[in-house]
Image 1: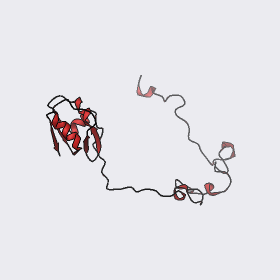
Image 2: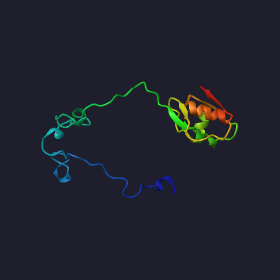
Image 3: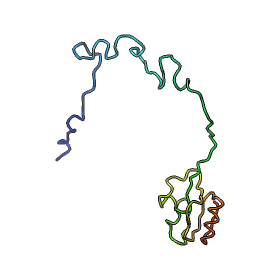
Image 4: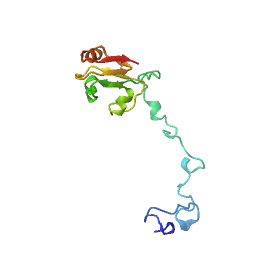
Length: 146
């Protein structure tokens, strides 16, 4: 097979619709826009959510709550999941990502106390709960804040 033998899959390529090219074309006269009205005019594009002048839904509904633009997104990891690492390993944010425990380290990682830790680990993350820190140190490891 050579380059000049290649063809598109049947049905994948269609001719473009030639509108406004006479009555016999099936798209003549009003060119598929119907008779008059807002959508028949040139440059009629309307923004998303436009309801023809009626008060749009996003303005009719009441506002509720507050969105803090300065809030930090902290990823929570339980102590029990750290058993995935070998004894004596250094666990930091990159190690958590490589192990598949954390997908993206947004603004930091916090270790929570759910589960039990059987291995001696050096954990270096942004924050710990008090109980999680105690569990890590009780297992013989270190809990360092970065």
